[in-house]
Length: 299
Image (spheres, rainbow, N blue to C red):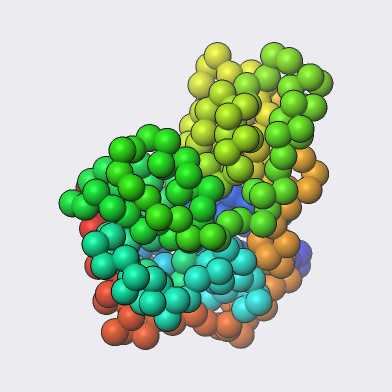
């Protein structure tokens, strides 16, 4: 029996649901029940009757699934699949910064640990960051941890934003010259980039979109060729869902090594051993969920 078949059999036995982020390897996406961005996946899992959630992503994503579905067993197939940007801020560091900026509301990107979410006023995603910042009843914002997403938001609001010096190493590898080179090779292609990219990269884009936004953009009838400025794992889904259209990764360097730690072997092992499990302690879960709930109320 093949590994995908064994995964499907065990998934039924465990009453499990398999989630795969858009950046996962194609073979992992193909065994998943849902493929999408991190918060979207956690919300989909919460709406199922599954007892077990296998999250093919990175650690903060599995934590978010645990926050929204505390009654479910959440498995992360590789316990070392972390997020460098999420690790660039700790709850202790945030508490210190809040004392320095007592008037600032803390807007926390979902790409953070549960402990950091618990110290924040409200969460945001890359898709709704501007709307969330505009909704906050404060003219002063501490935006954590992504300085580039924060800068993008700052160009679309009059509020004073304090940036935390975090960033996504994968998106930071995408340079303006990469866009220019690809555009010269494919002059008819639209350029879409993630708001975690550098400002000079964003300035060259036709659209600045989350991964979910990129998926929707590609479905438009008049879109035939796209240069994609984000982690190249998304190319698999774009091509799979849009046959006949052309998608080009902006750079072969745009690879998240942590996302690629998940493999079919590890998904199978997680279901066999029911480990590694990610569980957010209840006091932290409740406070982190409050920050997520505030976001969901306005978006």
